[in-house]
Length: 284
Image 1 (cartoon, helix red, strand yellow):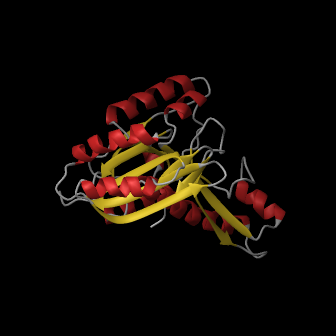
Image 2 (cartoon, rainbow, N blue to C red; image 1 turned 60 degrees about the vertical axis):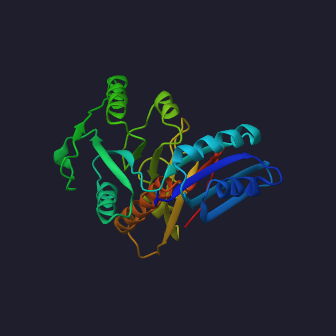
Image 3 (cartoon, helix red, strand yellow; image 1 turned 120 degrees about the vertical axis):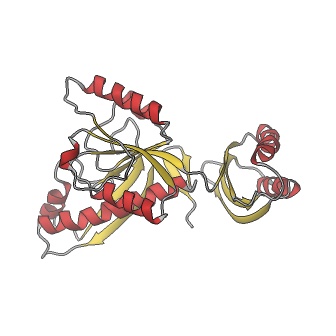
């Protein structure tokens, strides 16, 4: 096995966790290539991400060895090959700048994902983005009266495609509490505002009316609390008194696409660990 393996774990903090984990990897023939850890002093939690060359041991062998350690230390852990591409479903509405950017970065090899389907609540014709060959587009129209049926169709699509991650690429529909709970930790949304603040309709116009000097965007995991999920990545853009609302919209589109792409990359590379309503992000 020449591929790197990525181990992520969290547990209650105690002495010796790093030594026990790296010692186990050494005993199995592994060679640590990258290791990051965080001790949350306030909450008493420990988080760690390790990328390592496996040596002669199979991934199943590491899993067997880690199972025993996990029982002893109470670890919550994942282990996978770095080359494994996640199956991703992208949801979109009329604005497709984030969708186009994600697909472009995938073609460049920046995002290790397999886009299994694209779905939207508007017909394919409203999108200007060129979709990859072989990736189907599913039109899932929705009205307030048909929302339960539309979400049932969306659930069926997620199950049928085996999607491991759902990305809301400016998908302008609020997911129900039940669906948000089902997708906890594997559904990423881009919010066109530097949360918290300027929520609701036309946030850039609200920002302009308040004379703000910076605008931003926030990528977060979806939860039942609208736009309150654990934040993965944020960015801002300076503006001035000379910027009209249209200028803010233009600049905002650029922030949105790069913030969402970075959040997706961090998730795909197992660099985001949930810590209650917050996240621990091990950046490269």
